[in-house]
Image 1: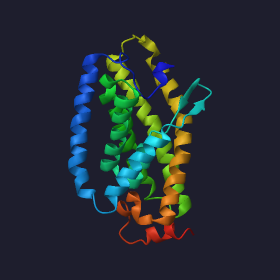
Image 2: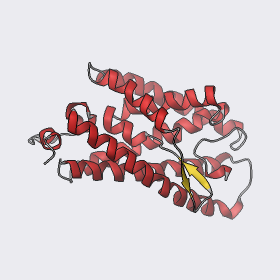
Image 3: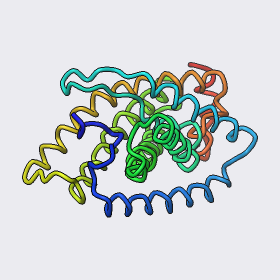
Image 4: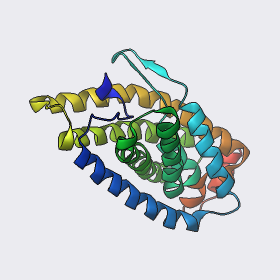
Length: 238
């Protein structure tokens, strides 16, 4: 059950591997800060705070995964990427994870670099890549936006879960031998169900924001085709 959790506890991954991923997370977050400063404007800055607060609040709501005997909650990578972009989105999720680890003990402090890598960096990056792809092939309507949000959120959770499998292969404190493939399959299966819940929350939130203020949805502004009245189509709820 412990190995199914995306919040890695202290002692599951050895110290050297945890240190490597902590350095990787720090370097990547530094790049996110530098790149994200270019995106910040009067709309994005307050939206980033709202996104971080929303992800923190919604992560408190757990839904059971009966096939695995554990519960799951929103990771928030795809949601953050869609609303505030990949760079600022990764920072938003990272802030949530840091507060959870330091204040609530959710995930080991020594494993913080691993948790940030999986949920904030891999999850957000995978989500945004899928968003960029889907918004280029699906119509810019409420239905198209909902499908984009749902699929990108679902798959980003599954991809993020495989980051843990890689880290466990590199430095897991228990030798699984040939069972590593089984761990990968178990993680993917459990997080597929978690991803369904995340997809529904993400789609509902993004479509709601887009109907009221489509200009606040980063993906619609940043990934708009050269000749297309896309934001109006979503905002008008056709």
